[in-house]
Amino acid sequence: MGQAGSLSGDRGRVTVVLLGHHVEGIAKEYSAHGAQRVLWVDHPQLASYRADLFTTLISDLIQEHQPAVFLVGASDLVKSWPQDRQATRSRLVAQIASLWIG
Image (cartoon, rainbow, N blue to C red; front, side, top):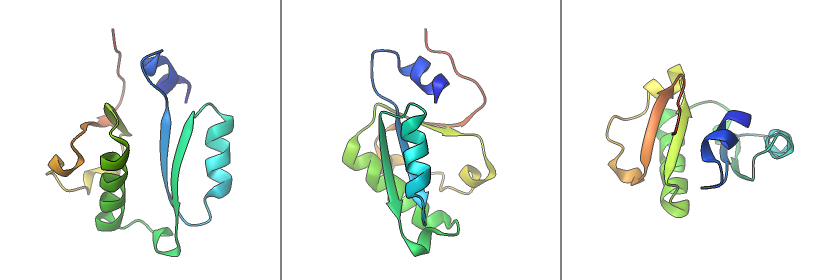
């Protein structure tokens, strides 16, 4: 959370997207650690990762909230996302190892 806050500076706010089942406690932890906003979806179908469902929900959240930049940490899960991300209409930066904004 600290790095995200440093990157956003005074230009924006840090928002966390959290998908899963029984994640209210995790959402509260993100808030306690500096997230200015947590967008979370809690549903039994989200207990296990499904690329199609997670991609649809994330795309919907991006379209609704229109972030300037959407950062995704490097993970095997992200590699399973569809390559065509035009539907998000956001600048998606995936597979982040490190990033500096000057």
